Length: 128
Image 1 (cartoon, rainbow, N blue to C red):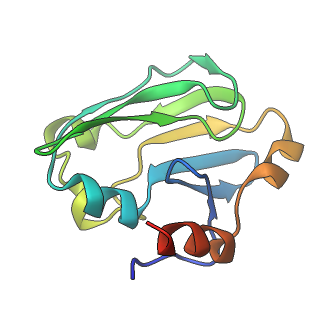
Image 2 (cartoon, rainbow, N blue to C red):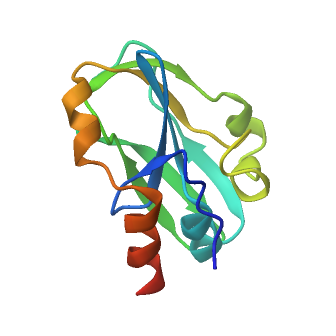
């Protein structure tokens, strides 16, 4: 069973979300990175990009496959994890820490209510 931290929120498409004040940090879950395998490339959005909930943010590419990742909420890209450009394997070694992907400003706090709890996400991955 994958590690699913209880303090995070999740999406059906395997992104995790950490709320930090009026920003959210986004990454892909341990479950997703295990399915994808060793990461070899990450496409990141530019700071200042405006995104709506469910917009594509970028692509993570592994030795097995490429997969899009999405904005779980609407907002503005504040920062992308540039460390991943040189070290995409950080997603494999620390998916909930140094392997984060994007920081967004939080435009509409009510969108957080659409996200899954750790328990709800655990049910989804147990069906995979």
